[in-house]
Length: 142
Image (cartoon, rainbow, N blue to C red; front, top):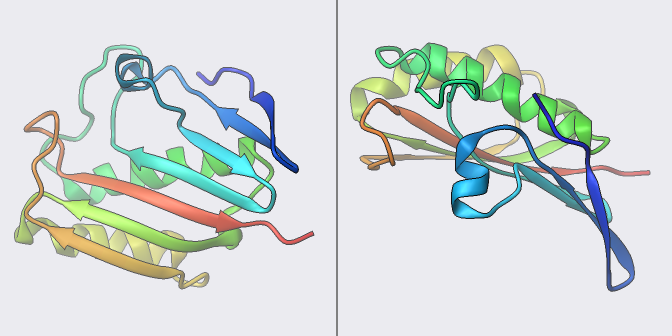
C-alpha cells in the first residue's frame, strides 16, 4: 500500500516524495523515492512484505529481485516515470551464488532498457534473509 506523494518547494524545482508502507521507511526516516526536476531516485529496495515486515522469498535471489523490480517500477510510476526512464541501477548482493538469479531477473525486466548497472557482492543487510537490495535512478525528459 502506498501513501500519497508529498510535494515540497525546494529551490527552482519542487521535490516530490513517494512513501510506502514499508516499515523501514518510518524506522529509518527516508522516502521510497524522490523526484526533483527530471530526476527520480529510488531508495535501496528489498523484498519486504509490508503487512508483516518479513522478508519474502528468503531462499531465492531471483524471486527477491523480481519482487524488488516490481516495487521499483511502482515507485517510478508514482512519480511520473517508467522503467524505460531508468538510467542506472545499483545492485547489492549478499553472496556470489546469488548473482545468477539477480542477473536473470535483471535481463527479464530491464533487458530492452539496458541501463548502466553496478553489482556489488558480499554485502550484509539488516536481515540475514535479505539476499538483494537495489537502487534505481531515472531521468524523465519532457
